[in-house]
Length: 619
View 1: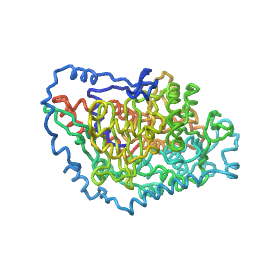
View 2: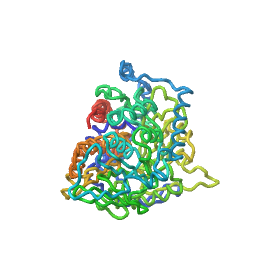
View 3: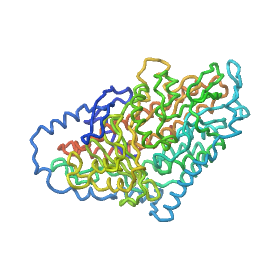
């Protein structure tokens, strides 16, 4: 996802739920039940506090004048493509929209299906005799003090995790002449999570790492920067003093191509996850680099330039000069690096792993994750997320690539997934650890049943009486129960609440071991920058390692990488975290005289500046 970024600068200074992006949030355990009696969980609830709570209470306590809310919304807020966006998209350097067609749809969907089939057949994976003879199985017994790094005897790198962060890191290592091996805990590269937006900054990093990978990704992708993006109100809101908005009216519209063109960056594309994986496996590094069913359980720093020994869950030992933990938000490498509790490392329900989890396993994982998060020092966002990739041509596909329908307690996000498909996310505020009822003959589709109520488009609306814009249910109804996945959203601060000088100076690295991607800085999805920042990590990490001429200098290079990256990722992560906390209060602004119009104006004005920060060619 990519759009809430632009209004976050204003949000950080305005009324709302406030969260410190640099320190863990206080945990509050809460017993809660949905009103249908089917969801009763114990979990950590992100509380609402700050000016927004006071404003909402004050508004409720004040006399209400119904006549102020009568009338119709501004007709201009119903136009998808305003003149200022149309003018930017008409620039010669801007990408030109190619209308959806049967041939294009067949090509994109066919390539995704083929990539998934290739992954299932283990094409390009390390198996059999090659596995038994892998280079990393040999303990080289490097002498104390280390060894020289040369073209004939390059750095060797182990990467824990075969998701996007791990694959791009491996590709960067290979491009820099290093020997690299990936250890992925999943049993297969199952298609999970739908397509990924590779934004302009990440495309530039990939272009620098491997022009071949870059060209393949651009060719396989669907451009999303060639249409309008923005924020809509999910249901009728406002009044004559603050502005009236009908369901589905635009609050803010903008383009993402303008800031990219200013920085000389390519346009954002969306590519299917298995296609990205297979492109990186085919073009990023040699066949046999990835070993599946391989979870790195622990490691030993051999010290004094002698590298690291990693121990897999089955007892297999692997040796190299460097270990990179790209194993997700519940990183086992991070657990070992920071000496976290025994339960801090968990199975990552994302990237390569998540598609292998069925609904029963997902229910158990939701409960287990509450315990894991407490040990891993991760923050529960307060949101559970339903997501699916709907094989559906959206009614506004030719003009809109991305939109958020905002509401109290929840919001609905959709983005073009390419090939006449829409990827959607329904984020609902509720305690952690919740699960949906199991299917029954009376209700064989419990997830769909709930979502139909949450985003009701007629009758009495949702449980708060809000009648939602039909677009949310347009996509929900185009999805099957089996395709809809649910997970609680967690993130965490890249800057650590610690007085340990080593961790303050090098928060993601110690000795020959470093973290990248979600293992270092898990983010809320609102900016669509989680994978993009992982890609930037991979580029910068390998740039620092490429300058190493002796293994005794590895630790210093990894520490420098962490120091260079941590400030930028902290800012991006803080914006994403703050944005999610405040999105559900956006509807409040629509009813406040003066503040509402000012809020929207400043949001529109701030967007290009936030995007300029994200779309930098240097990282």
